[in-house]
Amino acid sequence: MSGSSQNGETNGPSKETSEADLSERRDRLNRMLEGQRAAEDAERKSQKSDAPGYAQAMKLSSEFIAGIVVGGGVGWICDHWLGTSPFGLIVFLLIGFAAGVLNVLRAAGEVAHPEARMKRDETQDDDRK
Image (cartoon, rainbow, N blue to C red; front, top):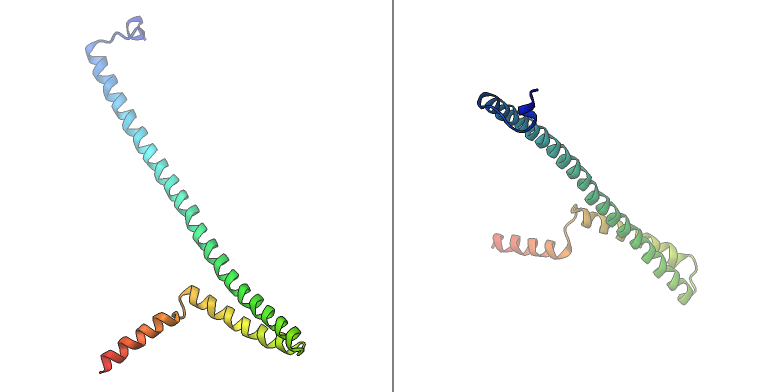
């Protein structure tokens, strides 16, 4: 390089060439950055998609366990109050298990909630009339 180009002084033809080179380099850099941003966005979306799945799993498992625990607790209290030891616990534990399964199915959307089922039945009755 000559001394004049190092001092920032450029001649006409080399200035046009350098602007074209800079423009080309800038375009390449922009394309590379767009690719990086797209990759980062895809990674961020995949990380976010795991969180709702974990939340749904925790919700379903807690509803199932809560049904069993409440059923067992009610059965244990009934046994101590009525003196019918293990029968109340067994019966209410099974009822709690069934309630837990029903809660999981409702939360997953497989079974309609009672209010929604009643509204659906009312609209079907109105359509039949």
